[in-house]
Each structure stands twice: as structure tokens, then as C-alpha cells.
Image (cartoon, rainbow over all chains, first blue to last red; front, top):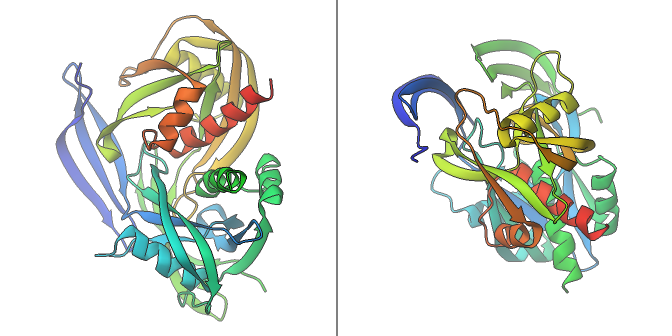
Length: 179
Length: 179
């Protein structure tokens, strides 16, 4: 059976700085029709910076959509003509001041494929060297170094609530256990 | 230092069936201004259904935003006046036909807090009993039972690309290892 949804009509509702919104009318199996609200996003990278001592470098920042300060891995939107790895190297320096002499691709995932095409590419950053923090003009970021066992604890207690950061902590634990 | 972003203006761009979009003008520290594009979402639940034999019950469905069939945990939007646990019980039966005699809250997380307030509440479903699949009229879903070791393998190979499903597989592994 072919489950693909053929686009019959596509209406652009909004074109913004970070996201666009469109509403597609799709044909379902059995010649039925439905609407799909789709948020277009350029994609992002997340970086898991692991220090020699087994701690991770995270950032704490205010997130307007949820009206809260959240603790997250360094991350950022992929700019036009940028490879995900370049974004990872750039964002890690901008947000934390650390340059990674080793930046390895780990995996990629969709944050919420029911309504958005946003994909996050995850990288493991090791062999870190402090250079100089250089955030975007409108970014207000606190840098935190936290040991992995403390982070696992924080995930279990519900104190880390960002999906890419939870995934990253699991991967960091696996990486550190395998060393 | 207060990092909170005060809303100076809020413009509603779109009100839809599943998401709304608004653009907020916020005041940053130092009296500067910036725009925030915010996708409002009612929240969702994800269910980790674990069978006695150590396999998980997953669903495969076409996701229009990414134009692909994806393998995911059963999940669904929280309806008005519904508690997340009720949504979890309802969606598991609708999508897979299984009734969980035990449905335990595990944790909650934001899928992508940079642009949306969508929160996913994760539940562990055990003591499963087959009743009858009853998908929504416009849902076309294939049910798959896959052993946990195979799923871990699929995550490592990049064959599972949905964030809530990756998080769930890590939790299921931990749960099964602790039994």
C-alpha cells in the first residue's frame, strides 16, 4: 500500500526570519483529503562538547516560546551555504568560547516530524581549547561545565527538558563509558 | 542578571487546527529589541509500550513535513480537557490496538524550545493486552513489534530519526536492564 500523501494545494501563510509556515492539502489513500500545517525550518546543529575530565560544556539561556531559562547543549541554525560541521565549529566558539580540535558527526534526527521538517545534526566535540566567547549581539548565554554523572541525575529528575540535550547526554555517557 | 524577555508587542499570524503562529517583539537586556517567531502547540504524549518479551510496539506512518515514512513510538496531541495520561491510554489503543494495564509517567521535554512551546509527556506502558486497533479516520498506520537490541542498533545506524523515539529507546533499554 502506498501511504504517500500527494500535495493537491499548497498555501504559504508566513515567511519569517527562522521559520516559514505553509498549509498543504493532501490526498490520502482512498481519495480522501486532509490539511497539513507545516513549519519549515532550515535545520540546526547541536554540539556535545566533552572535556578531558568527563564534564560537558552546556549553555543556559532564556527561551521565549516556553518562557523559561533552559539548560541545553550549544546549538544553532544552519546558515545558507553552510555545511552542518562548519555550523557546529562556529556555534561552539560563539556560544562557549571553546574551539574543538576534533568535531565528529554522530547522528541526525527530526525534532517533531508531525508538524515541522526541522532536523538536528549532532556532533561530538573533543580536544577542546579555550579561545574566546563571541555570542551574537542578541544572545545572552551563561556557560556551565557539568560532570556527566550529575547530568544523568538531572535528566532522571526532570531538570533537563530539551530533547536534543537529553539525547546528547545519553550519547556522552555511552562515549565516556567506552573510553 | 535578569535574562527574561519582556513582550512589547504580540502579533498573531495564524490560528490553525494543530498549531498557531505568533511573532513577539521582545525587550532584551540593555533595552534592545528583537523578534521571536513562536509556534504554539497544545502538547503531545508519547507512549513506550514494552511487551513481556522485551520488544517495543512502534508505529510506522507517512510524515508530510519530512516527506517520509518514519518509525516512531505511538503518540498523539493532547485534546482539550484531557490529562496527558488519558491521552496516552487513548492513543495507544487507537494506534496499536493495545490496552496498557499499567501506564506510568516517565518524563516530559520540549521538542524544540527555540521556536515552539510543544511539550511531550512520555509514558511507559506495560502489562499490555490486545483489544482492537481504531485509528482516526485520516491516520494510516502500520504497527511493528521490534526487540530492544534491534532498536538500539537502528538508533546507532541512524535508522530511527524521530527525537522522542530515540529518547524512548534509551529509557526502554534502561528499564529492561534494571528488571
